[in-house]
Image (cartoon, rainbow, N blue to C red):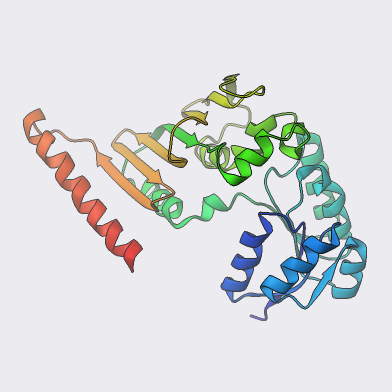
Length: 296
């Protein structure tokens, strides 16, 4: 298959991940990068060996004619950039949060459909090897029928990016209607919604402040007809980490995204004293297999 021609708009922090992934894939040639701040576009082009950089998005589209445009700007710009990209004949990969609101998302999808172009929300965690393995094991019946899922996400507001948004009242994340949560939880929600097929599940949530003047902690409950889920987002625990545990009638599967590990605890009819030995034994075997695979 011939390599796709890729262009990227928005050369901030997340752009590095896009450019690295495109380069590693072997399926894409990065033709150009663009940012309204010329120095950001120039430095990205130099660091990743991209032949062209622009500060004018329409000029980039006209001169490079990319097959795919990666939109890695703050979400307020996603809709107009996507509409211009698909009208120029490009497919689009859009960073999360995909849109500012549901109405914008609908219009973005409609614009892509009108030009017969594909558009993808940047929920790349759905394709993380650990989640792919978990999905395959669920489909293989390892835990029976899924009844509940829980997502835990610890976010580091003392890290480089966290400090930036925490100390800047005008940071684009702080301007979102959902604030920090709207930017940080789409990956967790994407995994949950894969397990809850209901079109309109019942959602309840509570959020609160911890050390800052804006809400940083969140507990969310989603109830479908047959499956429920919880999402807990906190900023205090260290290290920052995310895991998902999926429960079924035959046990549970736990995904640790940082360790790229999947752990199964199958239901057992063993006597309780035997189970206290059997459970850690099987857990140890699984950990050894994960260690070997990740080391390789």
